[in-house]
View (cartoon, rainbow, N blue to C red):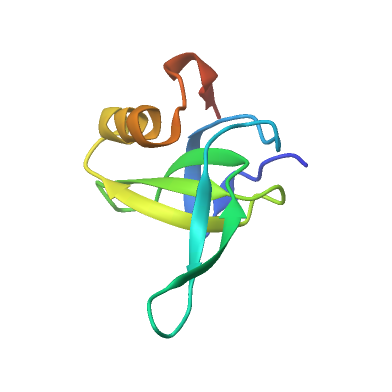
Length: 97
């Protein structure tokens, strides 16, 4: 599946390939008791920005490019650093839109 120019209303700046072979981890599904009951596989990452915002957003995505998690960041560099340190996304894995 090809990535859209927009995810959750935010413009895509950079993204990774989207594959189940990516080792980016999972996003936990939490029940009403705040217990993790399951996990969604992160198959891709994207760095996006909403129009008029100075912040960047690091989106965790599934195979259909649906956003399953997000982290707000002060800069593109911070988003890339968080992706590297928390999700094992190497700098050379980013594709510029």
